[in-house]
Image (cartoon, rainbow, N blue to C red; front, side):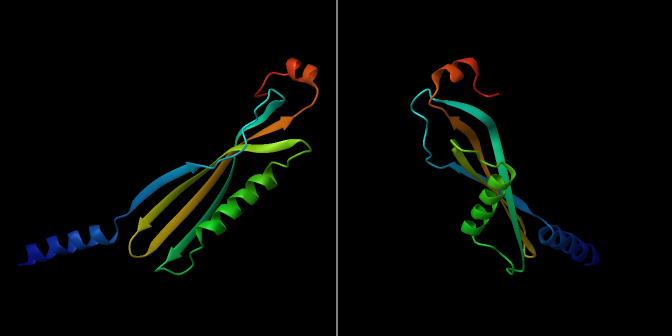
Length: 129
């Protein structure tokens, strides 16, 4: 009887302290430069926002996390005149440690391009530098 109770106790602790994670992402429709009048300034710039909830309290909405991550991306990569964000991606990672803790992490990534009217400048500078 004691061995059975200790096995049940061990299984209960394993279930209680187990966790899992899911990841998903999607690409937003963004303007793709149609003409060869741009150069890529930076690739894969990102902003990250996290929110955790304990017993269901303290969670932010998905929209708020996206806005916070995008604001961090723009704050850390100031856009100059004629520059734009393209190829925006939103990735989510959710970690569940039931029933105590749920953590959401939103990562927004993008590329920064600069548009130019002067074709001679563009022929001298290779994209991605």
